[in-house]
Figure 1 (cartoon, rainbow, N blue to C red):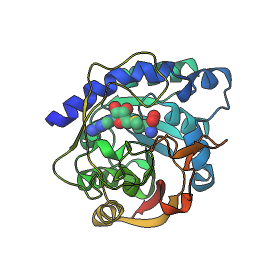
Figure 2 (cartoon, rainbow, N blue to C red; figure 1 turned 180 degrees about the vertical axis):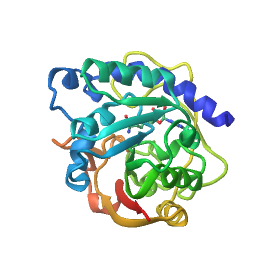
Figure 3 (cartoon, rainbow, N blue to C red; figure 1 turned 45 degrees about the horizontal axis):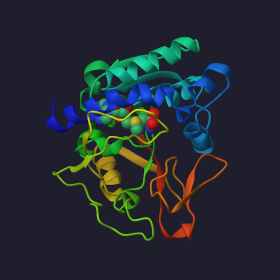
Length: 273
Ligand SMILES: C[S@@+](CC[C@H](N)C(=O)[O-])C[C@H]1O[C@@H](n2cnc3c(N)ncnc32)[C@H](O)[C@@H]1O
């Protein structure tokens, strides 16, 4: 495996238990209420439409809260992640909720070795997923290979323009990070994670890559998908720019000052031709 991905996997394996225990991922709500959906999937609902009966796969499913939400909407779901610790949490949650979800452990680039190519009506992914992948072209090839003709990609992701902004600058929007995909990763050294947690991480080094919006669209077109929707949003489910954001009742963060200045996330949908 790519050295960067080994570093990232170690980091995600440490985060999994902290995330499952954190109020942010709402595991207790899923256990208490069989109709509970993650805030991420609740946001998606108007665009997602009726997914009951679809054969879906959630790429980079993490601890499975969004995967379970999609299953609760009636899709027959698989989830893929390269973090064994994340999948252990996902299995536990699905079992406790009586949901039959097929979880597989693999890197996204190896997805077609562990999942049936050409068999999925829906590939769902996003919310902090694409930054962990070095090549958007490889990702688009995998998405295309998983979908059956007519099948749909549903992607909601942090906007690459937001990811180019310096998050350590609380008073202004300052562009200091790559917008376009580069071979060299952006290297982070951080012992914290993005949820409320008591513990710190030992595996602190991670490698990330941004992918410009045009690069994402072009890669999908190159691999035989047709774009059907692209919505840019003024909100995002995590506090991406501390000091400059406010949390809404919908669980989404927005710029507190002139939120129309910057797209924070986007939803892209595409159909396999
Ligand atoms: C922020 S989570 C995204 C999932 C979802 N939005 C959530 O928050 O539950 C990122 C996930 O991507 C996984 N991941 C990172 N790189 C990966 C790769 N190359 N192949 C498979 N999974 C990967 C991590 O293990 C982690 O579970």
